[in-house]
Image 1 (cartoon, helix red, strand yellow):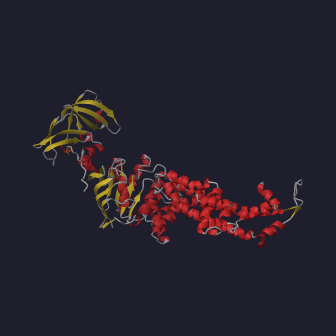
Image 2: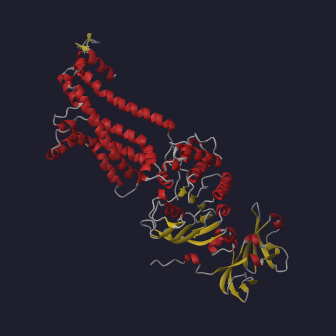
Image 3: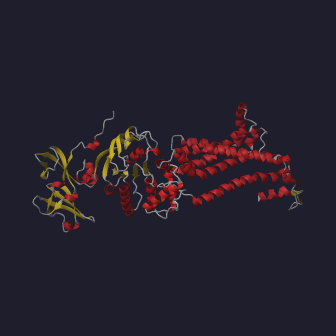
Length: 253
Length: 357
């Protein structure tokens, strides 16, 4: 329903209160948004790059973190889990304000890499938690068996461990991508107006009162996110058909 | 080429454990033979296999396969393949891909892998199952795939960790026969870990009995039954009759009177043991008078409890021979000379620990 309204907004011209349907259909907003003058195209590219970078880095970090947390019981494990989760719980505004001071000193404010670093803070907990669960369910004896059958450590990674945790890696990456994709406050605070991602552009249009532009940009903003979610779900469905269990009930001794 | 396995003074402690899991273990497996490492749960059997496979590093001692030491070699370069208790088939691969896994890791050409995989599947009666996923297999089939996946590598040493414990009893005997047949045909030096003495007897050329991280006896199954090294070994294999006494001048003096001393036994204190199934009931030249205390039918045989001169003895006899024996009845019992065996008295060897330097 909200999608539909956004869609109607984006093509409506002179749609005022009592009217149930827009008086006139116009693609003016779309042609503006899709033109290079609006900067929406460039912003889309920038937002995608930041979100992909955040997703890749977060997923790479989440692999060893999830492996350690999921496989081993060590003193302080709970404390580490709480620390991992904390950024997802803390208000983004507090994080943004705290980071701004630090990043200013490091010269990271207003840079794309600064924004990616800032996005990692709320993005990391999701893939880390997913990977923790994946490694907790993955029987480590599969790796030992592969070694004993003559696989070198890198071969074990490529042929056994990565296939086993691949679904979790994809879900974790998708979640990190989405967190970065919809990030507003951190981008505003750290990007200092120089890094104009789609949520920032969208907010500018929304506050300017141009419903048609807001609707069009919102749809542009929505589409990649929907694609990522759809793609991840499709892969999961596919995987369930050919996949199997990597856990072994009652192994021990 | 078949190789011998030698474990020399092997020791290992799990971090934080107060007692070593493996303490100065010596074990020899002759080329092309099957040794069963037998011990109760928690006796460190699996740890020993992991040490040999290279998944754990010993604190002390050496592991030799043929004329080379395996110490310091990573698991994948030992050519000593371990098959775990659970089949651990890789779920994203087909049966054939699982069996060919090790050869793929070696980078062999595809046609070679396909040919050897096909031959191995046939050998383990898995023909036609190559394209199945592991999930679609029965427990016995999965176990056979796990065996095929290991044996296709033609290992110098083949190790099995409780391979049959997850199978149903009927299936277990079929698998025992299959493992025995494959091991003989391939002539692969094999070490099987088990806690089941019947399984060890059925499978092994030699049984190594593990107690407190050390081997108490390593001998052919018949020898372990007839000439156990300690009372604990005798009990583990169903021994029930133990008579403490003293050997002197060719006779063993105990409560039921002097008995002929078995060959090879020296003078001194000891415990005489005789297997329950070796006792002969009924009149005889050397029969002693016994009183029946209990008679219980166990299927293949009857378990007859007797008291002879104040000593309790247990006899396992064919049901036909025990029919009609009732509590309180007097009967003759013979302890055949060739069935007698003298164990050293305490301290029993298994309680002696090697002093750690």
